[in-house]
Structures are given as structure tokens and as C-alpha cells.
Image (cartoon, rainbow, N blue to C red; front, side):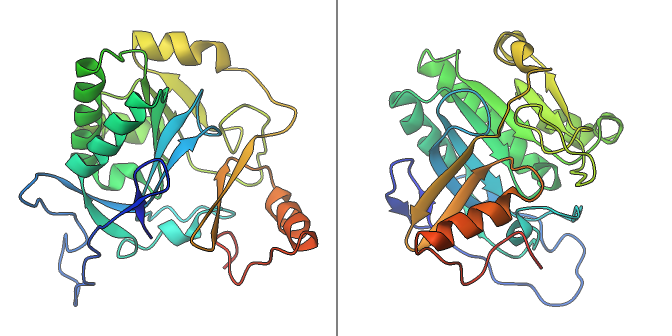
Length: 254
């Protein structure tokens, strides 16, 4: 996985060694000289299918929820991906703002498994947008945690303090929905700030006839960005095969 700067140029990031044994907290990111570190699966930009406008997308690595039918099984392993300094991610966000990005989307994986690093990322992103005079650029977080679970956790609540909107709830394959940016009917889009209410309020009950899926190709890997409905990834796979594009492996089947 390359951590990219929003225009396709790779930046180097260190992959941590898998620790041995069952040491409590062994998978938690540690701080380096630059500050907080986030375990990351990928960074892509601009993306247009996970929130309004052109956005920087950060997918964290590690998710214990293991929702059946998840399209991002490769993000489950907490030892996968790479450890990336939060300040590096904030610099990518700053570049994106300079290029006119409308927002930052943090997904995964499960962002709330790394609450301190998530808080540092959102704080840094907020600091940079204010300094750039881009307070119209919003911060959106996807989490599989339920509202009650977030409310019961001081760490999770603090981590989301700078988020303008949050999409909450486990993915449930048996509860399909047409609501934009959500994968199942139980998931809730919750604006948290005045900016979040202005930007996301009109979309709380908005449905789309067909979900937007964005396809990006980097270094021989095909990245599918968006929230597909059940069965659509298989249809896309067949369509790509008809065009001569085949997958050696994919992330949505065991």
C-alpha cells in the first residue's frame, strides 16, 4: 500500500512488525517524533462517493466487528496496512484543500479502534482548514459503533469531537437501503456541528436510484470507492471481466 498525496504520487510509510505473543495493547499505534501515528490501509484523493463533493479519503486498518458482507475485509487485520504519522496525513489534507477539496472522509477498518490517533487527525485537519480559511470543508467519519456504544465511551466521544458528521452502526447485509452514503438501513447519518447540519441535513433521508461507485487504478490494483448494494460488486466484477480486467483476488469474499 502506498500512502498517496491526492494526485497519485506515493509517499513512503513504515509498516510495523507484527508483535509476538498476546501482549495487551500490542496493536495500538505509538507516537513517533512527529506525534501521533495512525494504522492506515489506504489514502486516496479525490474521492466523490463517500460524502459531498471532492474529498480526501483515509481508510484506517483494523476492525474487530467483522460484519458479514463487508466489502473491505482487507482492513480487518490490525497488523495489516502501515503506520503513518498523523502530521503526514494532515499535510495531505492541506494539499487537498489547496486543490479545492470539499471534505475529509475517515472510514476503515474501524476508526474508533484508534481513538487517540483519530482525535489527533481530526484536530489537525480542523486546525489546517481554519488556517487556510476553508471552514466550509467538512470532516466525516464512518464507524460501525452504535450510538449507545459511542455515548458510553469517553474515548470514542472525545475522538469524534471535531467531526462535523458521523455515520454510525454495523453493516447489516440483510437490511439494504437506498439512503445515500449508507450501506444498510440501520446506519444513521448524524450531523454534529453547524457546518455538518448545513452540509448533511439535506441528505438525511435522500435516496439515490443507484449508488455511486468510483473506480481508481493504482499500480495494478483496482480500488472501488463507495457503498455498493448487495450483489453489485459481483456485477461490477463481471462487467470488468468483459472488458478484459480480471481480479487475482478481491476484498469482499473470504
